[in-house]
Amino acid sequence: MLNYWEALNIVLENTKLLGKEKLLLTDSLGRILAENIVADRDNPPFDNSGMDGFAVRYEDIKGASEEKPVVLEIIGEVKAGGETIKVKPKTAVSIYTGAIIPEGADTVIQKELTKVQDGKVFIFKELPKGTNIRKQGDDYKKGDILIPEGTTIRAPEIGIMASVNKPSVYVRQRPRVGILTTGDEILDIGEPITSPSQIRTSNTYSLYAQILETGAVPVILGFAKDNPEDLKEKLSYAKNCDVLLTTGGVSVGEYDLVKDFVSQVLNVKPIFWKIAQKPGKPVVFGTWGDNSEKLFFGIPGNPVAAMVVFETLVKPALRKMMGFKKNYNPIIKAKLRKGYKRKKADRLEFIRVKLEKTDECFFAEITGKQGSNILTSMLKANGLGIIPQEVNEIKENDYIDVIIFDVSFLNKTF
Ligand code: AMP
Ligand code: MG
Image (tube, rainbow, N blue to C red; front, side, top):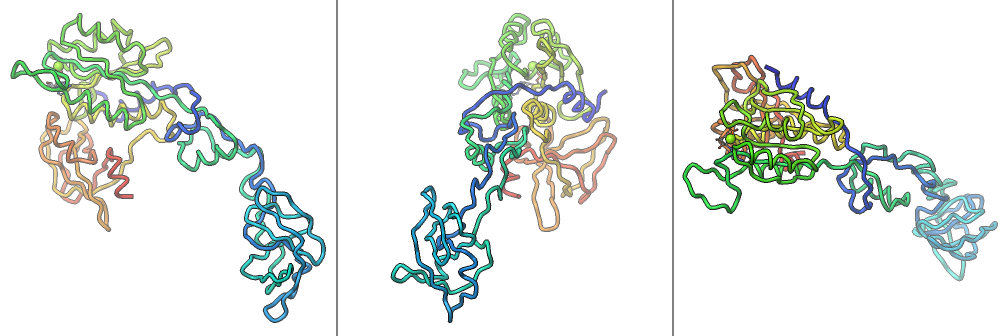
């Protein structure tokens, strides 16, 4: 059977970058840039003052001191955005932060080092030539690539794009990810329970939230019963999606019909079925669409398996489609608080752990029962510890790799 790492590689090899779309700059936060952002002019666009004070000629202020101040005639003022004036010998121009340096001036004395009296300025200190002048092009030059394609847009990127006069920007499209929930026993929120064998769905909505968290667009396609007619009809609703996720109906049970019908209805080309991992072994992966640009994941119905398969297989693919530079959740090393033993080691296992950071290292604690139906094991967890295939035992305080899937843990910790 395929191991997890091989399966992940196969998924990513079959995942294609989505196209571009144009958004208003103000709607682009968090998206991935799909064009280079180029400077339309130098920044600063002209030499300007870094201080409120007086623009002078260095020649004129040489030797100024507390005891022997230099006295210059004030011949006018320049403000940020205002007209400029020429500085002639033995004169000074009152200047404000951001204002153009007047022709003839080469130095700005901040106000604090001066005194004004009767239209004259007293300067009490000699400053090196060029002091308090922000040179044209200091920050960047016209034509520079300021932000390369592929960058995640944050507040600083939005600020730069505004300053180079971009009202709109090309970003990567977000995949529409359809969720089809299957199973005769499954009810949506709000549906009345009419028989004790019925189960209220969790997967539909945990997947919905995971898709949103990844930055993609979730689409609930509905609930299909385990019969060919209903399944075929509901599968046909997926046609406008870039990615289809089904939950349930992918193991070998009699009613496990999904993997056959996705091929019939959507022309899904199956690539693998089953991975040597726990939970989530019976996962199906395939591609579809005219250029095999669409993905299909048949996810097992067990609630933990569904969430784990999303984090470990679906999320990296969605991130790649959206053009993220990094496809994976962060992986750290953590010491396992209590030892872990298992009889069979034929599969890689993702154990649910609660991470804790101390001054020394990270610790990981297993969150109780680990059955793939125990959803509360996810509730208490912020990481998935990896027990490699062939490993039967991890001793107390041995290091394991942990995938951090919980964004709030990252925010709290780093
Ligand atoms: P299946 O993969 O269809 O064999 O389902 C495996 C187990 O997961 C069964 O116990 C199902 O009742 C349960 N299950 C399937 N789908 C869901 C769902 N959407 N929400 C919660 N549990 C589910
Ligand atoms: Mg089922």
